[in-house]
Structures are given as C-alpha cells and as structure tokens.
Length: 86
Image (cartoon, rainbow, N blue to C red; front, side, top):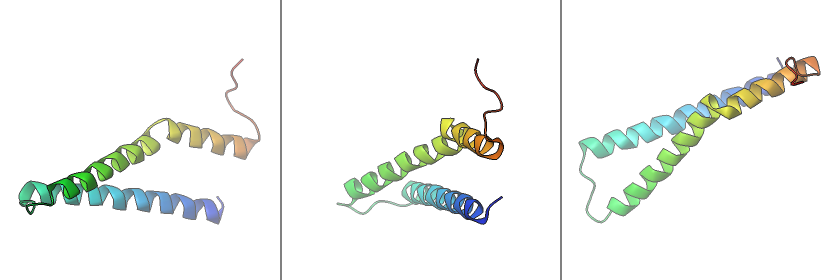
C-alpha cells in the first residue's frame, strides 16, 4: 500500500471521528445545560450543520461511496474489474 493512500485514509478517518465527536459533544452540552437566551438560533444552526455533516460522514463510510472506493481500489490493483457485468 502506498504511503500517500495510507495518509489519505488516516486523514479521512481522523476528520470523520473529530467531526462526529464534536457533534456528540455539542448535543450532550445542549441536553445537560441551558442555552443562553438569544443564542438559541445560533446553537440550533451549528447543531443542524453538525448533524448534516454527521449524516454525510456516515453515508460515505457505510454507504455507496464505501463500495465505490473499494471497487476503485480493486480495479487499480488488478487493472480490471473482478466481477464484470455481462
């Protein structure tokens, strides 16, 4: 495995984990602490953005992008598709 691919994978996993931790940390904070008056809309917008990012991250790692990435790796390794559709 090439070093640049390893670093790319580590970067993707690290960003995904940090993003998800941020989402759960902010969600936990909102559950256990009162949001200051006047900041409800701001906190709601940030939480909504983090929620949408979490959905995209989970979709990438466990959805169709994951299978597409694996197929691309197989094609690059073998030079052809192992299971061609006929």
